[in-house]
Image (cartoon, rainbow, N blue to C red; front, side):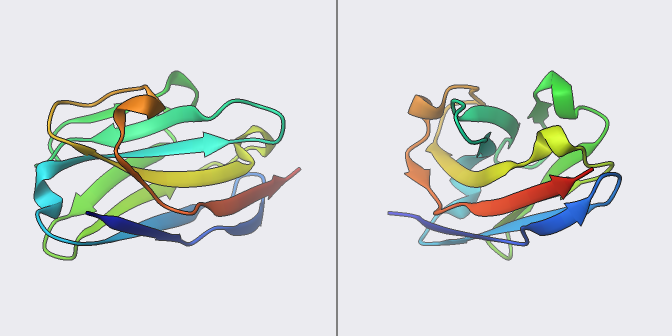
Length: 124
């Protein structure tokens, strides 16, 4: 069992930066593929980024490539999402997710554990 707690969301202006953190409790954090998803009002939850167990392999949805960076610190059981050059279209609730084994996946159904979400609002 893994429990995930996100933090770091807030209200910012377009062009600003935020860093989201996701702290995981439980054992074997380094064995999980970690991902970030987001859900805007009235829209489906969408994949944002994922990182493999070692942190060496990362994947991003096209709309955030070059602006967002996912990373993990296995010693701290924490995964991060550094978000730069934020746009109003990035406004959403951001969720951290963990997937047992396997490789990265864009499908939310492939992830086994979820955090409660943190709100990110970007004003124009």
